[in-house]
Image 1: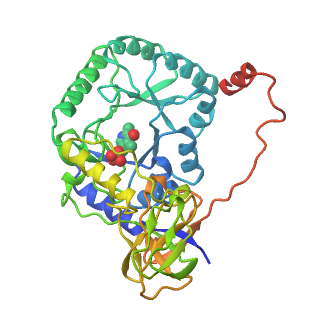
Image 2: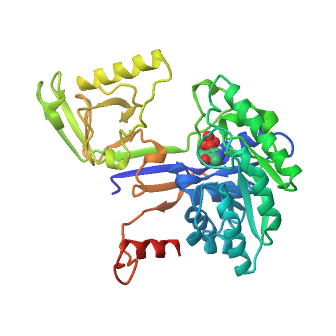
Image 3: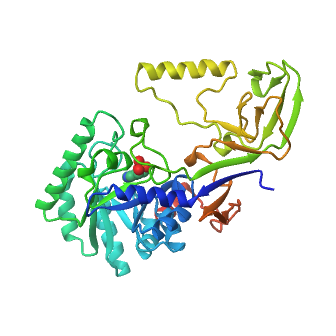
Length: 406
Ligand SMILES: *Cc1c(COP(=O)(O)O)cnc(C)c1O
């Protein structure tokens, strides 16, 4: 009996893809972002169903993620968005991944390596326009073009940038980023570099700026069934592919006034039943990203949430459902166990509980069950194993570093 599992409905992912491509401008294509293990759903499974649905291009953050897709038969374009280093390049080029280049020093290094392998490496250029993360800044573009013109073994398939505030109502910052991108592309063109594809949109910009769909739009959030923010409600019908479930592993009737959990922050208000479920913050349960207030009203909401916590009340959480009833978390969430106050209604050992679990934070070791065309057809279970990394410990930190650099 599985004690905790996640059901992923791949039909919903395919349906979200079909809805999204309906909004594509002519000539543009979807580059499906399946980073972070497909936002927790499973990168391979999500990419497969998208490829079956006609998607021709995928993006991940790391080379390793890209290799996993190739090893599992994904044939489309695979773009690695994050910066990569030399030890990862031979495998990446051997598998036909397209690497993002965002650093002048990497250009000739990669050119030389590709030459040594006797191949043309396909690369995409990342421009920095306001995200403050990776990419070429405007003053580097002439030198970049010079290096690329000399490179014999690099073929530039694309140029792109990433928006920092695309989901915001105020579009000024994003428009400025776009203007910087257009300017960067034209500077590259006058210096003799004209990449085949251009792309700028993530999910939010895809919805808000149809004129900027260009050759590709990079969609992640929408495909896994989320809107990029509250302001996008009703913009397109999305289906939620995700359901996290677990079973009641213990249930006990307790008297009014019983303390529950660490620090005893929760005390039962009347006679009730306490049910224990096998999930906790090590599974990503109850783990929320740090809330940064976007204004005074937001700050007030965060303060109220925290005051409520002092009294053992967890506010703003999505519902926890047991036999169709909403139940609440009692006390602090533990590392791998959580207690629910389920009242006096029926509750038995083994009962199914629907919990809310943030996709990208859900522990990958939780069993995933995949649904397609109405039936569960596959499961994925990760086991921890040990593998020998090296014959012996390196003698010094310097030596270890040298090995890492390859
Ligand atoms: C994650 C990511 C995306 C996808 O963003 P969503 O908002 O999830 O659609 C697109 N581009 C880059 C560079 C990303 O890192």
